[in-house]
Every structure is written in structure tokens, then in C-alpha cells.
Length: 302
Image (cartoon, rainbow, N blue to C red; front, side):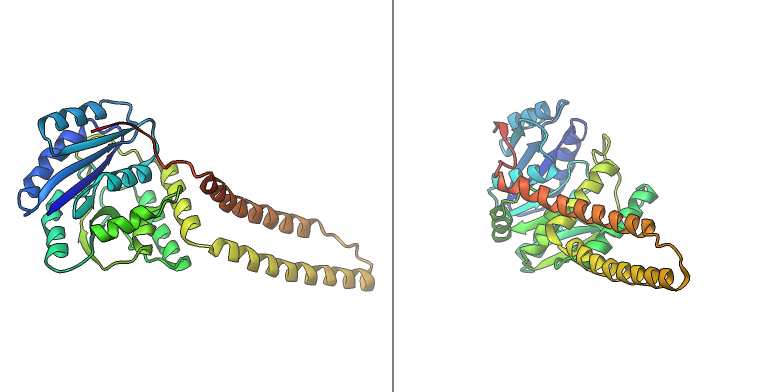
């Protein structure tokens, strides 16, 4: 029996050795063969050199290095494809995903019969208040406008059986949103809650802009609600515009007041631009999908 630990990395030369040492403390408590699957997502520091060093010292350590930065979603896919274990766990290298939970996750799959054991943050202590507020609003929104169930505070930290891993790999979307994909493929999942943990080293690579783009990708990938909103909004404005214009004509006929349609034009014009913009986002995602480009390109592997 083998457990594969998939770890995407981008400019994490400081955190990588710390992660390895800390994780080793808990993998010793798991009755399974362990392998590490590190993915260098086009790092510009010495992350790749650290991976090479670890691989030379420990034959259980394997890695792939991308030709450029393709993003965390691509790195997660590459790690899952590289993993050969009966059980596979994905986790961040900054130790915000506590390795201390690994034995409990393994027990949930091996002894309790779950297909997946996933971790969620019960608190967002240490995170900027504005970022926390937007994160909560995102989880609330996507849970209401899509058919998938994404738990508030859900992390990419989860252990899965091989059957679930294979199902995730089979999805070859270019615009990937793993949190939604994990829910979409189904399988029985146990959730473990833990308090937020600060990074062990380095700085987060997720800016507010990147997180916003990631949220938009998730909404577009797993919900058509914005398109439905456009249809209902267009219908509503058509009715309002018709009534408004009819009232203006009646006032003009009875009182000689000139008909002014400038406000109505601005209102409808703004709606049209909004509708076109949302449709353009969906079309842009379709444009990238139909090109069938590879999700990532490997420069080096071991």
C-alpha cells in the first residue's frame, strides 16, 4: 500500500525543506509506503534546486518542473498524474495544511471506508479582514448559484482513494477549478475542521487579483446563473422601458410635455454592455477550451 503526497510549489525555496522535515514526523505514523510528488510551477528562485537535493538524498522524492508558470491548478493536475499511490493527498508546501492531520485522514480512508477526507479552516485568524469577507461571500454565492457543494473554508488539502483520483484526472478542462471538480465527481467525503495556521516561511503568492480571477473561473465553470440573470434582467428592463415610454407618450399627448428618453437609453445601454461582458467571459473560456492546449508543459522530471 502506497501513499503519494502531492505538493505544488512556486518560489518556495525557503518553505520546501521545512515542509519535508515536518511532514516526515507524521508519515512515520502511517502504515504505508510513502512517496513525495513535488511540482515546480516555473519557480524563479532555487525551488527546483531544493527538489533536486531532496531527490538525491531520498529516493522516495520525485518531482516535475514546468517550462513556465502554469498556475496551481495545472500543478495539482501534474502531481495527481505523477502520483502512483493507492491513496493520494494534495497539500500546500507552506504548512498551512497541517501534516499532523495526515494520520487521521489515512484512518478515515483505510479504516472508516471514506473515499476522501478533506480539510477546512474553521477560522480565518491572521488573514486580512477584507480578504476574509470576500472569501466568505464567494463561498456563499457559488453554493447558491451552482449544483455543486463547496464548503466554506475548504482547502485543497485532501486525501483521496485511487478511484477518486482517476475520476479527477479524467476531466481534461483547461480552465480548472479543483474545489468544484472534487465536489462534481462525487464520492463520500469526510471533513476535518482546523484553525487557520500561519505560513512556515516565505510569502503568499495569492494576491487579491489572483484570488478574484480564480473565483470568477469557479463561477463560470460550475454555474450558468449569470446568463439566466441576464435573461431575466433583460426581460424586466424591457417591461420597464415599455411602461416608461408609454407613460411618456401619454403625458406628451395630454400635457404637451416633450418625451425624453435619454435616461432610458443610458439604463438600457448599461445593461446591454453588462450582458455582453458576461457573455464574453463565457465565450473566452470556451475559446481556450476548444484550442485543446496542454494544461502544462514539463521541462524536467525525476
